[in-house]
Image 1 (tube, chains in turn purple, green):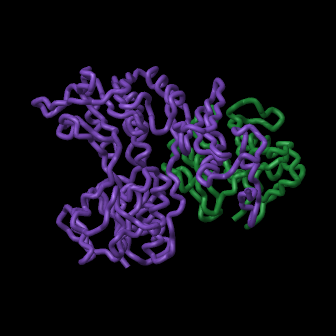
Image 2: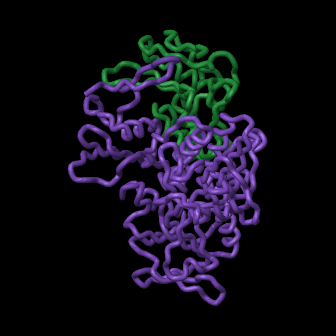
Image 3: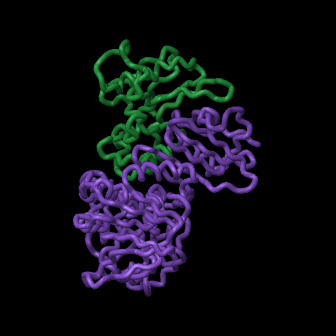
Length: 410
Length: 148
């Protein structure tokens, strides 16, 4: 049996490990454009110089040898030919497969504003290659413009601050991290970044950016006419599933590659996992999808069921935040807020069930909230301050001392 | 693998287990008699929770069979040791993202209070050998180690 995996992110890596666990002798080959295994969540540590390429590796030491996995790195798949069960690589080589996993991830989305897509000093921050290019470009850049203040935009800024760059961040919304935080939670990070020297321009969009004869953009004009001079531009406006190698393959796509709960695509013996499937954009879920795909590829029944993805943790300037579920208030919500010198907590409760929580400053033992929110557990019977609810209120030990959930039937 | 089994009905909330854990993981030399309980650097890996009726519910890392913390770790800092079955944490690899804290359904994990760069995680007192310090210190024998 020959298993081929396109992509060497966490979905691909977890799939490969899972396959090896189930099939000791099958051939496993990974093919990736990436030349280093790296955690995308740590690219800011590479930009800042805190870690080198090896420091971003999230796998066990000697991963490829230990699990006897082949790896073609720095290579892109150009075409998938399901009828011949073959891949065409950009080296003109063909590779055959019995089972194929597409875990090619996603690409930074550069919006069609001005000549952003054409300029040579505009980067997304998605791959190690982006971070490497940004570091190189930053050597000669005094002023950096970051478009978008989501987690990726702030990661880029956080890394570049360490290099002593002058940074401006433009954000369309009225606050930073608009998807994850409410205004109060966002203000704390904004203040911390501003104190470090970052300038934020909120409620503004880039509207014009022209390449000069050197092929670079030296200023971006905002929708109110303001000009922002820049030597380097980082666009953090989201990602799109990386689907280019699918053309002509007949594999059904929607936002990403369409998969069933076993991570099977519409074409036999082809599976997809991670960002390319467009189901969620966060690490734990991509890893889970990879493991499920690996099991399916070995003929073992498996289903991706823990699909909950409205969850994030944030850590900048030693200020930690956790947000799970809905953050935006709706009519009829019960809002609980608690605040002191070291923390801010905000919870949305509706009909006795928690819809969302935001904890800033102290997230000790906060894992329980995800369970209560995603399973919509009724908490109205617990006679405690809502923020004091803990696993003690659902405590039960079962077989082999495992923790279980004691939830009263309503 | 070995797991700390809990008979929570026996727990009287004395927190000897927490003091023993703090002592076992303190950075400074010394004995339990000079352990600074107010130093935020001394943190316990276990906690005695209370339910709404005031009953004590001890919270100890289960070193789960299918650990959510390991599955959510983006740096490779957390791994389940195939030999002992225990979940170990390598501080030097940790990216301080705290997705493990978010994903532990029982709320066992927490970031360190002082620097917010590390995870406070039970190591089964592996370096010390023998039973974990918490188990050795429990006067009610509410926790014990068993091969499961």
